[in-house]
Length: 106
Image: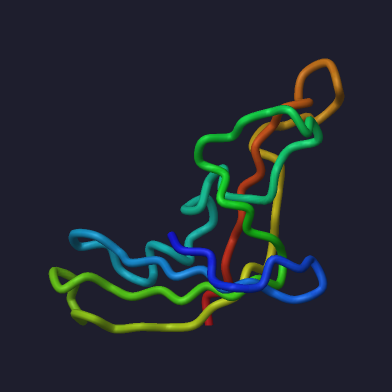
């Protein structure tokens, strides 16, 4: 993943994702593929190792690998949802919850 220039919360940022192996675009747009890649948790001191800070509205450029059925096929998608990575985010159980993101499929 690469987060392009931007940095302002007022504008969408751009992420570039290169699929590996036989991963296809249809796999990437499936709900749950970008688990824990959402922007932060409610705890500012938490460290989410998979968190790349994706937010609703951000742009995602996805390129299939050379091993996929349509080698090198590239699409532009956007983040359409961000959900907690567990059932509850109340302070007692989910303060450090990571957030999953879903990207648009079409």
